[in-house]
Image (cartoon, rainbow, N blue to C red; front, side):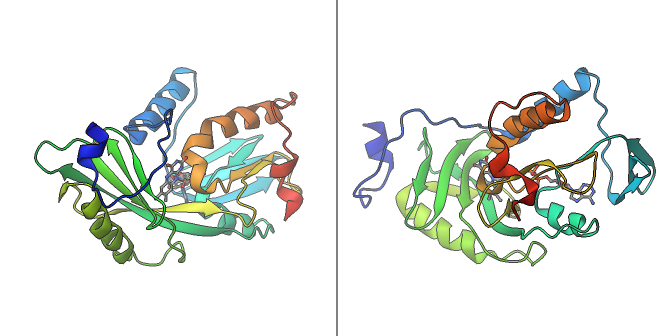
Length: 239
Ligand SMILES: Cc1cc2nc3c(=O)[nH]c(=O)nc-3n(C[C@H](O)[C@H](O)[C@H](O)COP(=O)(O)OP(=O)(O)OC[C@H]3O[C@@H](n4cnc5c(N)ncnc54)[C@H](O)[C@@H]3O)c2cc1C
């Protein structure tokens, strides 16, 4: 009954997915991963990487302030991976599907208890800790092109006719880029021509969900263990 009363009667049909897995605060989850990594003895260094180079049989990652050396390096640079790897002679056909989100209050006491995806218009409303999040679909543009507020504005207009959204809660929309490859599968595995260089990028629309699985598979490969799944579909030399 509650579902019926909140959503507009203009919706003539929907599929009710009973057991979705959702996260109300993705940033907090990623922060918890980072804390767990530190507590396991990992060191987190946040810096702008200037170059990654192979020096004899080791790798050097150079930042503005220091050089970190290691036997093995994982390139997990999301949408930025393709341009970095060009410097090492790899030409992956990467592209991005950009998208935006904005948080909203609810009007009066309206409460959104479940996510709603409008597949026809291409947006999703989800109850998050920060408010009701409206996330947009794919915007095809360059990674570094300026933000275009029209996609979010158009989706918001339709969303307001579906659910009583209140005022915007963020000063500016969040803009992100889904890192994609033409077969919409990531590259996970060793770089073909550089021992000690590992690649994990191109997770498209599912990178937040797939990150932990990719980390697990990467650890298995780097340790020389049998992998939990067949990694052939994700090998780098398919391009
Ligand atoms: C609108 C939108 C909605 C999405 N919704 C979902 C969803 O519901 N579920 C889901 O699973 N996925 C979703 N995704 C996809 C998900 O966000 C990506 O697949 C995921 O972030 C990719 O993770 P990554 O670690 O490979 O790359 P990123 O998260 O992009 O991380 C790459 C990192 O590299 C860093 N970097 C780049 N250059 C440098 C440099 N020179 N020096 C140092 N650091 C550098 C960047 O700062 C960044 O932190 C969505 C994406 C968008 C845009």
